[in-house]
Image (spheres, each protein chain N blue to C red):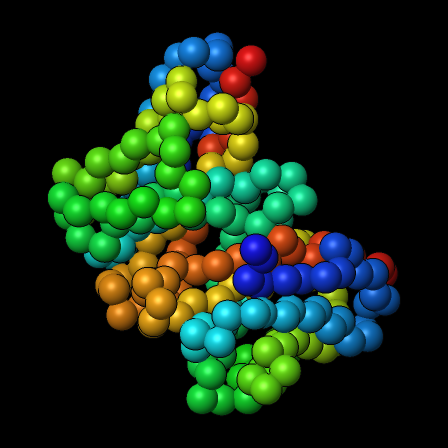
Length: 115
Length: 113
């Protein structure tokens, strides 16, 4: 049972436009959400996170939005740059239900930013 | 220069052999994790350790073993009992049990033939 879902395997956008990556979750015990960026044959790098007590967190060109009632979060990148081309993983964590300190990852979305 | 080191980058083994993947960190982090990534899949947790001399099974621990004798080191052994060992293995660490963010090493690509 996949608790964190990234339903779009890939996304292609033009440089300078907005990239929107989506993530849905099913476990209501999740209370913290993270986005990681990964290049091929490298480890993921932490990008941005959001606590369930917030609905938005912004860091430069990256903004994460959380809709708890819909169990949905999204990552907005604006403006998109060719160097943003990578796989983006959504991850979630919760304090209860025996899942303390574990991160549950989605399958990732490959973002391609075209010059 | 602080970080997480995984070696080697690429590893090849024959089927039936055990192999140990190295993970070292000099970040003074308490918690360490092992994940595996398969093509088109997310990261799946194999084992994790929140303090020295203690570790817990993750979601896919069968066929793997770990040790945590030192704070800096968390080696993973892929045993012959692991049915599909070929994968990209990632080690991560986090400052303490109260931290959500995990920081990853560069990974080891293991190929078993």
